[in-house]
Length: 395
Image (cartoon, rainbow, N blue to C red):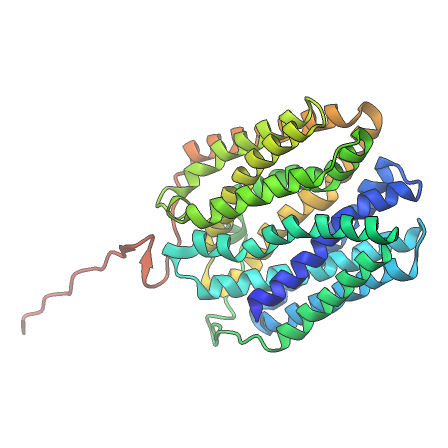
């Protein structure tokens, strides 16, 4: 049920990737596209910290249900308001709250279930729902608009899928969480500070992801190119990397993958600056798909490794907030750059941002050797060290 609900909420999100084109048809400019699409990031700044503070005490399931219902309400607003207005910005805020609640709660539930030595592969496979959604969502939305000449059917489908996610969450069963004194241990500054590298990288990786999913459709439309070629190439590569790369992302030194794959993402975005065309879209989609397909499970697993059992929700909330800020909020500045200097220079700026993230990850890795915070069981397939028994005179 959790997998099915996650798929529904992710398809809802993917269907609304066509929103940038819809805003353009209503007479909006790139700044308005970025502001409305980025409304989800503003709401995430409120929703993710709130759920992070409560998910470890209240549980994962209630937030998954609330997330599906919020996504339903936000999607329905676009059906009722078929014109450019402040209501669209409000709807994106509500959608952002819904996606944030559901995603953070479900990712925390996943951390409860996965053993340390399988975290990377597990997160990657769970994330395939979102990757598959990106592959089928934009083509479905584009086909519906071409067939009917209206965007309302797309928004109706998104509303029904969000309702389905909420219903399926009712039947999701949680695992037991820490109780007693363990559950009451405070989340200290040093616990958050230990997550600084994956969180900072997530912010900048989110910028790259947000720029592509927000502006590639409008960039393609302005150039007379079909934008679905990018999403199909991107998703196909992500799926392959998640299925075949389990041993790679669960290697003991998986933190060493961060910088090289950020560079790969930077190259992918830089290729789009060459020009809009089927060839550049396919190559950029393949490279960015491979980069994101490896980076997301690696970064998520690093956070799970560092997080204490009693603080999983808070730790993953900080990480999710970082990615959401990059993908939904900071992308507003890149939309303004597109208005000022054009799409190509905006993609160059994005590539430089990912390059800066790669430099930071490389420098941090040299200065701070990575360590897994383990509690019980095994870490990356290797048994934990145990102290020898104390010898006594009786023995």
